[in-house]
Amino acid sequence: MSSVLFDTPGPRAKRRNLLYTIAFLVVLALVAWWVLAALAAKHQLDADKWSPFVTDSEVWTTYLLPGITETLKAAALSILIALPLGAALGIGRLSDHRWVRVPVGMVVEFFRAIPVLLLMVFANQAYREFTTVSSDFRPLYAVVTGLVLYNASVIAEVVRAGVLSLPRGQGDAAVALGMRKGQTMMHVLLPQAVTVMLPALVSQLVVIVKDTALGGAMLGFAELLSQNRQITANYGANTIATLTVIALIYIAINFLLTSLAARLEKRLRQGRKSPSVPLPAQAGAPEVKSEATSGT
Image (cartoon, rainbow, N blue to C red):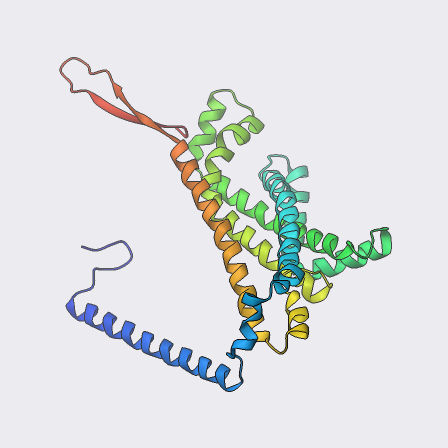
């Protein structure tokens, strides 16, 4: 049997693939051994560098947990603002009115082209010069502003691509029923496009969580990664151990986020389907079952 992309490998190809796999695993094991040996030679694997994360609760209560809180706070605020703003910009780019479509497109392309770190720096300086925001809250405001401006523009493109990926017949059918453009977008196109857009949206939400670390590096925002400096200053030169623990925390947060999104996507896909409905059989014809979906 063959697929669209490639033919099913034969016996020789299977043996060759097996050899490639074994060779890759051997090389990976050698690299891992070399890395661990180098770390051991530098005393980075000593127990005293890792034990504080298990035996000393102050590492968590004083540094890691406050850092997680600030990271999640900035990410949550950015997501709550960027999602509806990005959806509005994406719908604006699909407008039939040029006076709406062109300015919105310019805004999206402008903020999508600027690095998010530069947006944070500009926002921090703007808050410093033109507002009375306290210096204690200014880094948080700057981080959220930069993340919202950049990610809303990216989400706008995701929304636009998701709507345009739907069959043209969906919009035509709504117009034939007498629905206006706004009604067609809100009640027909967007509900169907959500399941198409969800994987890309989840990827962007993960990016938002990770990009909060830029504020800690440049603006003094007390997020999770910035706690590395405080921990290594108080618990010895255990940079490798600290960064490893922080990386595992990021992995856990983003894994939870993607798992929740996967469950949501599954429920949305199941909700779009209805049970099979038997159609009444005509004379001389067998009974036929029809599966209706909300998108048709």
